[in-house]
Length: 455
Image 1 (cartoon, one colour):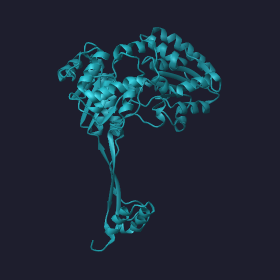
Image 2: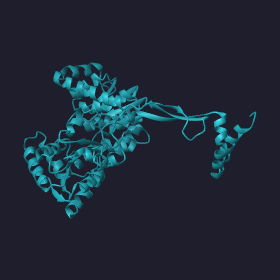
Image 3: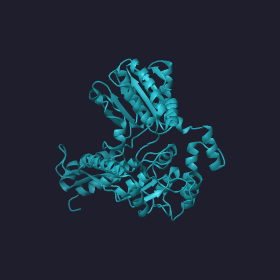
Image 4: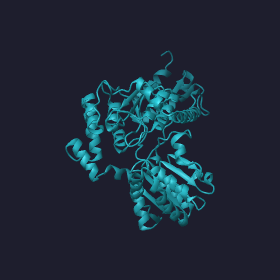
């Protein structure tokens, strides 16, 4: 089930090559079930990227008509202008049907998420004079929230009320005025009670029964039923991720948050049963989820493989987890922790669990991860639900450059610059010199005209 390979061997190099190119491999999805379904929907076999391009083009061109068409073909539900938007009565009904224990757990999670996001809200930087600049020139920084954003919440094989909280609360704390949430429905048009409950708890005004690339297209380009947004956030399947990438530039996006992944960095002190449980917790998400153990202990590697095989037998989502471990799971054995850390940084995982004797000592050396979980009790599901930071994180190695969703995702930075006559005069010569050096005479004159007495 889980392949064990020593780093530096041909087997390990093959695994690492595949993991490094995970996004490209996912985009090349070409299984028989996929081909059959795509041909049924589009009349021909298309690559995932072509599927997304076709849907987005139709959404941009035909608006609601395309939105309703693809929802019917893909999700099996006859969407129209009357039912595309979830009513307040439906949200309330979902809240009431949700067990009290679940509502209480969601309330605890919401409190912790909001508290964390409030704690990291940046302060405005007032106009001030730099330590080495003229007194007459001041600079500052203004933080302002986006006006309208779209939030995507996955559905389908599993629905995630936690994703409602993790993506919406940072926007609310940041001060976003309008939030449009899209989540896919079943063929009967129904949504998860848990998702409805979470939306009701946050008093969301716009909730749409929309999923997949068509939801991203509607949010990005706007239709008669779904006004366009300025930014789209939230995790999703391969097609959602590709759609977000395609509309980037027309609107902003948070990151490429696609099929989930975990990398456990462990030494001989880690408990094999706990490591295996955490790998399986990620594997049950999706057949495309990635679950990696990197350790300097061959004994632990073998024990984790045995534990995973044992624990998976009783999982309700066993088939999904087994496919994930088979296709995207591996155990890599390093010669020491230094080599293990280097591999973790290279793969830049969405979730990085550190189960070593002194995990906090490694923090400064772990440079590329969506979120880092320190110690044996900081299991990844803690971050999924209520630790505080958002669980929407970069995947596919993009954590080398992208960060997870937070209040910063929903804020714009605007520079502030102020000058008086004395301040401008002090730097006038340097300004004109630089303008001349770049051949921009109008720039030079814009400065020079202000130096003429009486002008």
